[in-house]
Amino acid sequence: MNRLAVRVIGPLVVGVLFVALWALIVWFFAMKPYVLPTPIEVAESLWTDGPSLLGSLWFTLGVTLLALAAAVLIGGLIAILFSLSRLIEISFFPYVVILQVTPLIAIAPLLIIWVHVASKALGSDDHPMIALLVCAWIVAFFPIVANTTAGLNSADRNLVALFRLYGATRWQTLWLLRMPTALPYFLTGVRISGGLALIGAVAAEFVAGTGGAETGLAYRILEAQYRLLTARLFAALILLSLTGVIIYLALDQLSRLILRRWHESADTGEEE
Amino acid sequence: MPAAGPAADTSPLPIVDLRGVRKRFANGLEALAGVDLTVKRGEFLSLLGPSGCGKSTLLRIVAGLVPPTGGTCQLSMGGQSGRRVASGGIGFVFQDPTLMPWSTVTNNVLLPFRIGGRLGSRERDRAAAAIRAVGLAGFERAYPRELSGGMRMRVSIARGLVTDPELLLLDEPFAALDEITRHALNDDLLRLWEERRPTILFVTHSVFESVYLSTRIAVMTARPGRVSADLAVDLPQQRNRATRSTPEYVAMCDRVSAALGQAIAAP
Image 1: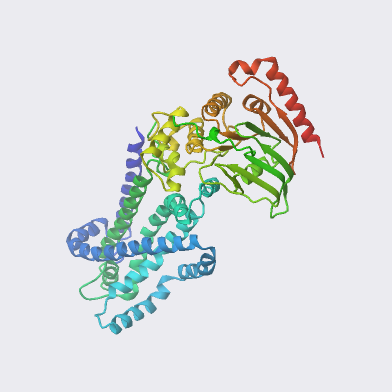
Image 2 (image 1 turned 135 degrees about the horizontal axis):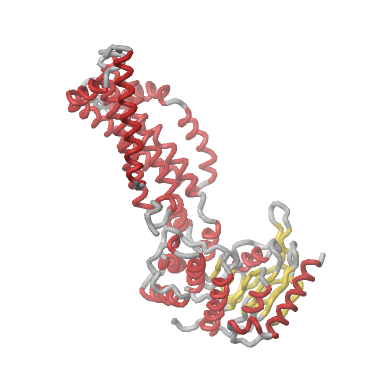
């Protein structure tokens, strides 16, 4: 049996066993559907509620991807700023850490008030999505800043010396040496941030509890909970996990593609 | 092959003139204790000494990468003399190949030109010539991780030579290679030196390598380093595999070994 088959069959067997065990438990303990629905009830809910859940998923995914994009952009810029000045790094890094370690759930209510006030002051409509974006961004940007800063500072010392020998400017060293060195670190940060952005978006939605036209998947989960539609809750949960997995796989593939020719981490072991 | 520029400089000043060079690092470590050394234009000078004797530090001082804490280091190149020289005047080859893993062989070799802000067809031709000169024709588009250790070192040498530097500094470049590869690269380095005639300052801790390659050997003491013996290598200019078994070569190795032994024993 080749390795690919094992990679597919192994997890598949575990999955099937898990679903069978789940069905068995529901049957054996005669569980009420609002406590634990059967796998079949969940599948039915996925089928019937699927279209409307997908609409909500689309909203949550939008928040996640926008937050990730902002984290990549702003996180990358902050890291470059840190690498250019040791003083800036030393002065600001503790606050970046504080922002990271304070639980988002605790900051979210504040952010939601502020964004509401700010958008009113600017004379525009209330944009609940902006508050969600800011929350998801706060969770997502730290791994990018931390990883990229580490990467920018870990250029080969002899190469740095060589750049000096040939009279390279600061910008040349940054552009030709530090940034390429940091690329694998940065991409690792992006992979972590992808998952965190989704978590941030969901957590923020729980707090914000956005109703009305724009509702994300997290709100649908709350709603399903209130109405004891546990099968639908499961369906939403499955969509959420699938989204997380797809985001991770997509970013992983992107990183492999970019580093294919030169970095060990992208080595699939298929050559030679 | 571009014209051999370096040898054209007929300045009477030695290309490198070190007077009483001292180096004490911030942590108090005394690496060099008054090194006097002049390097004449066109010679192949080996700095031979035990590990940790400050040879590499001395090389970095010559390159202007590390300031000495005492003494003077005068360079005289391209009609200029002083502490620093125009970029491209010095080539540096490290113990590790020190290549950029994200760049092809060609782009690694082009680095000195890219930093210098000139990257025309003339520079590309010179890079191609340098790659051919180290025997890597056909590998221009390969990435470092696709090459063997010896090939990576060849790329590093090509990069060091591409600007046709007057002075080429090599810091134990072959120490990490197996013996067969090392001998092959020794011969290549000698050939390149004869073709292009840069002045070479070569750091090594191998007696055999220093005798095989050099026209002159400066033996350094253990830390804090200074030059304890200065030996001319009077072997025929043309050297090859057979040289390694001539009685003259063996005798020279004995002399150098004895000098190195004294240098290590000296307080």
